[in-house]
Length: 267
Image 1: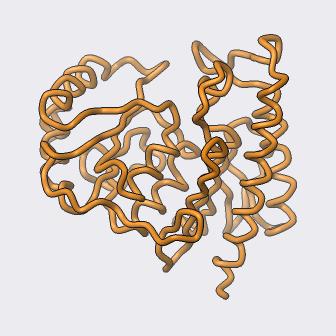
Image 2 (image 1 turned 45 degrees about the vertical axis):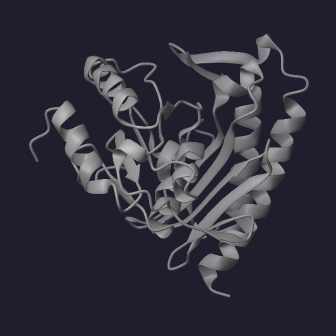
């Protein structure tokens, strides 16, 4: 068993533990537990407690590692290894009792993602992968779909809650996709959306206004499942660039052409 595979097995168990913690905490969550980090950007005591548990456990796995974590529980920066952590992706769903949210944990070695785990506790689905490996769902190897055309494809997206500079173009493209695909879904967890692309439930996912912890684990899952990941310009600035396209291999060129045209990207 490789070092990354062994680390992944530990992170899978940790993610499941945190997921079960979320399922227990939702039973007693009160509105007084909810805070606003920004307009419509919510956090609860549960997010913070979950992140603290994750960081404590990951620090034991790799003592020299640092963290990029949504709630800022740790600001330690590692020289070589850094974990990218979202303890609860889909907080708004969680607060409103919508049963779809996830734990997302990735590991970056220097500039390369080498491990990714996404756990959705309501369906008990754990998606995971590591450098040089396939992607898996609950121990079964997964692959992106083989649908050939955008017109025959199902997509996912998310709606921005603070960055409205590109909203008009985004909504115009949303209308275009409604008319020229089999549909666009909005689940409320970018991590789950990416995992669903990796296992072939969706042909593609696109969104802007995201953070690294929303997408890091899902990026590696899609890539190791045979898919493609880009920024809106078709480049590689998708982890920190705040916009992302993840698609199966067969529709990638067609979809990129469409989204670049909509957002007036000439690259």
